[in-house]
Amino acid sequence: MRVKQISFVPVVILAIASCTYTGGSVPVPDSGQITTVMLLDESPLAAGKELADLSQIDILELSPEMIDFMDRWVDPNLVDYFRLRRLLYAVMGDGTFDLIYDDTTRTARETFRDQRGNCLSFTNMFVAMSRHLGLESNFQEVSVPPDWSVSGETFVFNLHINSQVKLNSYADQMVDFNMYDFRLKYDREIISDSRARAHYFNNMGVESMLAGDPVLALANFRESIREDDSFSASWINLGTLYRREYYPVYAETAYIQALKVDDNSLVAMSNLANIFEEDGRVELAAIYGAKVKYHRTRNPYYHYQLARAAFDLGDYETAIDHLKTAVRKNKNEDMFYYLMSLSYHNSGDNEAAQRWMKKAEKVAEVDADKQKYNRKLDMLISNGTSG
Image (cartoon, rainbow, N blue to C red; front, top):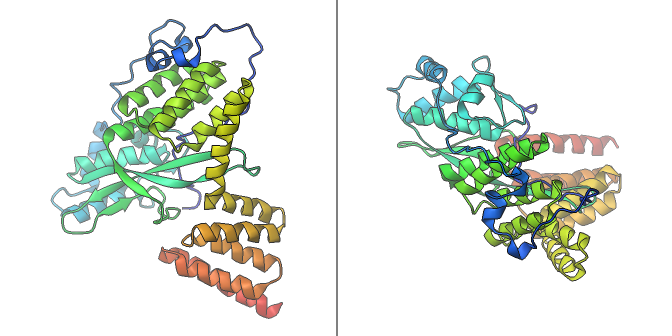
């Protein structure tokens, strides 16, 4: 299962590097004059052409082949718990369906047809199939800790998507494409189908943008925002699209809109700080830069990321310092303790390494994690005895 890495939804693009336009001037109004209609429906990116209408795309549509597959594998007369088990075996069991992870977002029927997809693709397929079988299945949004670059200056926030199935006579079941990597401590929330569609079109917008098709990217971001205009990720990615296409004033408006729906969005703040700095608005750049720094340094995962970078460089003392800060801010994250243990071990303090590995085992919430840390603890004890 390790080859199937967690398929995080690319809800935001990291804070992009400065964009310098080297061509002729582009006449645009100032940001105070740009409306959401101008961003979405009267965009200069469309060059006067009508954007594609994507509203009819059904991410949960079933194909006849999918229905035949379920008819072969799942007895509809089983109680809900065993219907769920049979469906899971059919789509995840060895030698049955053999779904393979890749980075492309697909609808339910496309995922079944190609037997490939990311976490949202798989969840689209699973929700569609489970509902066909009469199961109460919903999309679930999982907040994943932010990921910073080694320099700590750029970062990505991720949202992972899986599903939650409500059962009549058993406890609710969470279904995830890669349960090996899923961590129960991550915050999660049931979301509407409209929000799930917002995720889908946001993903498609990112994929189109990276493929060099800004018009299709715009159409997808517009559809995502129409599905759920409180989804800040789509506003952020829309801003990134405008920055890439050298419309910084439009980008600024999109980032400001992202902050209106999520006033804690560090990515929107960071990108705004970059725009203000490029435009010579030094005071505004400093204000937003200070906000980013304040929130960043209060985040334990930022210090964990710095610790990892120091560890990779062999600077175990610095790694330990950052990890102590991370632990003070969050005492329930076993990977902090685990890296602390390795840092002490590599610096020659095996007694401290064993103590921190025991703490990692203690806070691990999944039995598989406890067994993993227990094996590593045995290795540390063995190394300590022999060393």
